[in-house]
Amino acid sequence: MSEMSSFFQEIEKKTNRMNSFSDKQGLVSSTIKTASEGFSETADLYKNGLISYDHALSRFAAIFNEAYGIIPALRLSVRINTFNQDQFIQDYSQWPNKSISPSDSSLEWLWSDASESPEKACWVPAAPQEKDLLLQLLSALFIPAEYLKLAPPDTVCPFVYASDSHNPEIVIPCIINDDGLLSHQSPAGHHFTLTDKYGLKIFLCVQSEKRDFLHHPKQPDGYWLECIGSIEGYTTNRPRPISLYINNGEIYRIKYQAEPEDHSLFHSYPLWQNYFRYLDHQKSTFEKMIKGIFTSHTQG
Image 1 (cartoon, rainbow, N blue to C red):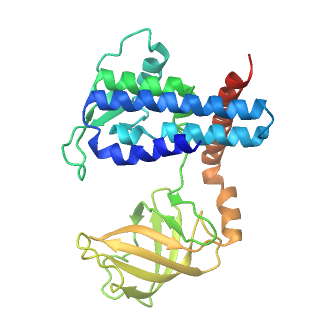
Image 2 (image 1 turned 90 degrees about the vertical axis):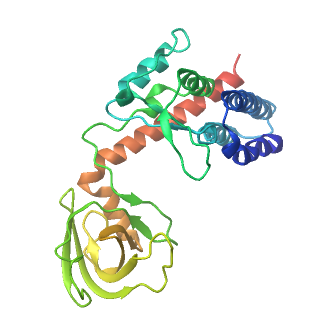
Image 3 (image 1 turned 120 degrees about the vertical axis):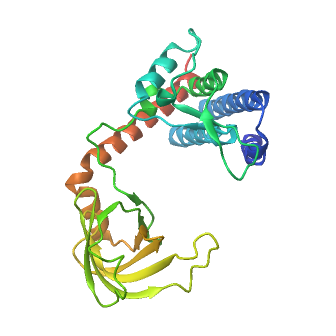
């Protein structure tokens, strides 16, 4: 396992040098080989009674995640959306028996970084051989097309980064009505009710404005508004400290410290239920996938 981890740690060092197709081909081949060896090693440990079933599944999942995680190092980006999802499923289901033809850009599900500079990407439709390489990796890791399918069309996804109890929640809002907040010359001491694209309300009383602890040359106009309030769909009605980051006349993020009752409300809020069902489905698909890989290495 230590050799396998060392291999995957080397991937990060290669990311900016992965320019030629042969480089990408070499990385995929070595990744598949290393992952296969890791699966076999773990299976042997389990069959010899040296690790438990749960421990073996955990190791299989870790090997899978590390191997699947090389995609950015290949300078490829999987971008499946409602327009190209069927094209992806068709390409994957027919691979490798049918060669992959270039797709119309509107149906393209794989993009390649063609830039010479590692600092700024230039995404272009991936070449057929790059798609072939990506599908080779997916197939070797026993990834079903279902695992990469989108959530159903009626799924509403919350704009929040989940965090643990020691860190604040970060909401990336899509505000359609700021109630005059952004145009107010002196918002401190005033109440505002913001509305997002789903009609959810953010109730705020602005306390102060802070510009002194965010110094970034690319965001010279950025500042925080420190408020007291609540966020419909994310928090209870109990007022609590809320921070808004504003730059170039837009609200970029909202930060707050979630309490246990907030997590309870968030997970039971009706608008998010299809989203949580989708997450449960993805988790179930992943677990079945890992158990399938495990079974294929421990039986027969």
